[in-house]
Amino acid sequence: MANHSRLQAVFHPEREIWQCVFYVPGALSVGGFELRMNHPGLLMLQKDENGLQVCVSDPTQMLEKLIVSLSGQWTGPGCRYEAGQGITHVEFTLPPGGAAGQSVKRSLFSKK
Image (cartoon, rainbow, N blue to C red; front, top):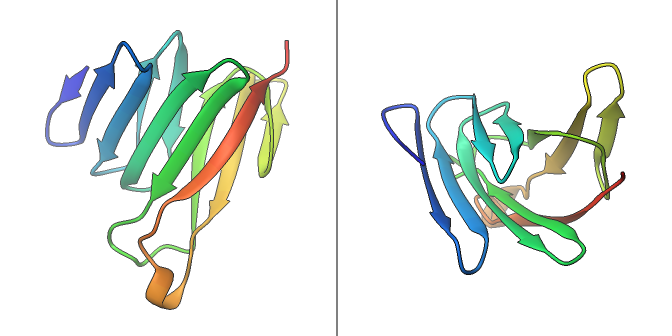
């Protein structure tokens, strides 16, 4: 999928899991849609029968929030849809202190 200085990404077709390392903010096309990260970080995305499972983390342990933007209209915790652009922004509040760097998971549901 991607392997360069800005982004590394792999896909497991049997489990429909994408695992991405964003070294800088960036974008990637996965599974028929576009996704963006507003900061460097780790992202794991899995399709399931209900929608998507999205996990993010900040290995630098410096960020308080990460925003993942996905094409299409999605619902779930932290979702904000921009109809004019056809993009859903999902805000993840990251754990502080001793829990910093741990993953945060969200379930997203497609609104068609």
